[in-house]
Image (tube, rainbow, N blue to C red; front, side, top):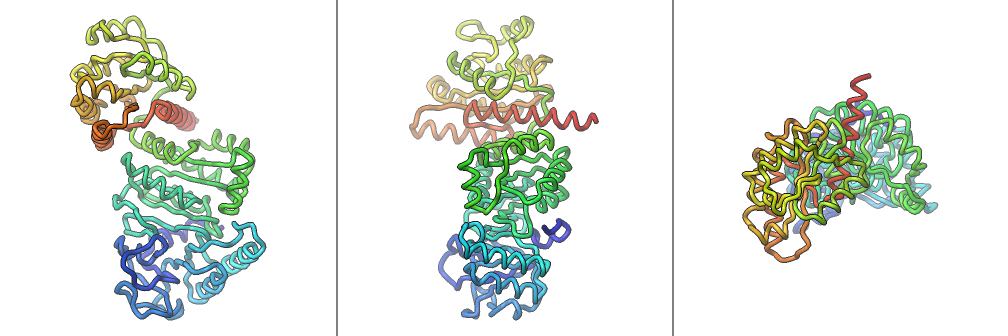
Length: 478
């Protein structure tokens, strides 16, 4: 595999040639990569390659790479698989060393023709010193450079880096992550990873000053030892959150047919996560929420949590969710209960852990004192505020936004440096509930308070945060 020193031009290109650029059409389709680059406003020099066109979207078209006025930083190939070997030979001949192969139909098919083509392009790339992401790859998304080859990408520039073998996962994490307040530095869908794979890209993002957190979707890797070393070197300073599917036989079979990857024994991967410090998650949503938590929240001293909400049944279910995730809900001390009772009236409010206090949930003025008491307990490390949206809406609809506003604007000031997060539940489908939920979400996300869609995902994420915090603390102590 090609090392990271040469990846800067590939991932931050100042010039791009698109081989197989579509001729002018109204609107860019999802496979019109040149059109997407133009419409997103790519800031570098663009060269469309199409021998049947003179001008494409206002840019002079060229018959081939040999006709370009300069070698480019990145060549994007969007032609059918049998033509790709010829294009790679042209790349070698013209000194264009960085290549993104969008095309599919190679070794990932499992068919003989695809395997032969895979062997051929591998030989050309290795002997010619080409750095290749793909085949079967959507390529690079860089909002800072206005670089993207697919539709629907957000414009916000951030510091989250994503490496993924799956194009669908790239689209999913960008879309869902944007909803909860994440924005991105670089996203790379590297597909089959012909000569550039997860190890190369992780080493690059580990040293990238524009990236502070890394998410990885990995179906398989050629050099597990190198990947482990790269992750272990990174996790102390930059959290690495990873989806590693393949625990089941069916998943391993599917991975092989998707990207041609060998998923490996999951017991080996369990040891990989335990020793490297990477945080293992199981879905797009869990990756997004875990990245959000490790970026926004202070590191907790342990896994002990207090839950503040309303409803006896919900409190029991919250306790179960925390227990399943590996969190501890310590009982409140007599002193803490007495302090809370000074603020929380006795009628209908049960001061245990979870704290069932409907008065507090509908009167934000009571919240500072309650948070101060909970966060000052040495045996508590984190606090969850649990919105019962349906009940709160029935009692006082405006109090949902009022409580969210308090948490967003000043909640963390009363936490003694400990993590504060929010979650919610709602089982009604009327538009009025959707409206208040959207408002609540916008307030909390804009205010930097992680918001989770249910108590189970809240508990799992906080458990991962506590485990990662413990790993870093141990590593720093040695």
